[in-house]
Image (cartoon, rainbow, N blue to C red):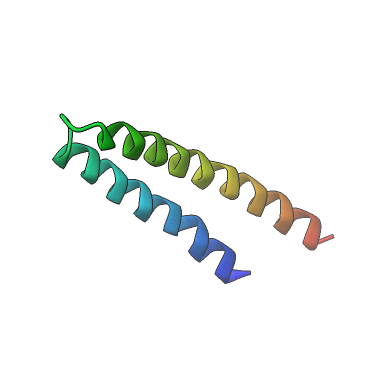
Length: 61
């Protein structure tokens, strides 16, 4: 189950990279796509965190 936690935090790493890309290319149209992908990565982090807790709770029964 530790690999699932690794992927969970990988979403945060990708979010940081996307937000850095937004910062560097703010005037460009590509910045909006990176902003959207960064927001999706943050959403996926919290979604996976909730899903992993739910999975661990059911696994311990």
